[in-house]
Length: 105
Image 1 (cartoon, rainbow, N blue to C red):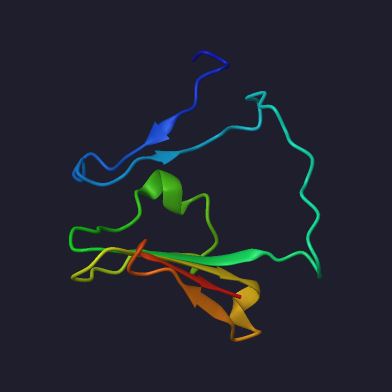
Image 2 (cartoon, helix red, strand yellow; image 1 turned 180 degrees about the horizontal axis):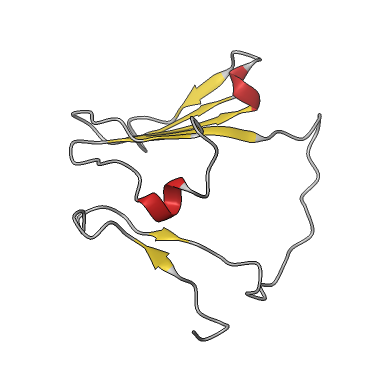
């Protein structure tokens, strides 16, 4: 495999779903300096993507994430939820209807 290639993982039975790009540690990418932010750093602890044609995580992807971190429930509408630090501060920002996105921290 070309050392500059980014492998793509997709379930063969779910070609209609978005692709997942895996960036191996051996791939040299240009890193940016972290942006300063107020407060302590947050850790992404949960990702939930739902929609009418969602299926389970492909096995190659499931092996890379901790159990319970990525959820893909079926739902009538598309939505992506990102949660930091387990949502302990009980704060959130719902970007809908502009984007099907909910942020929780």
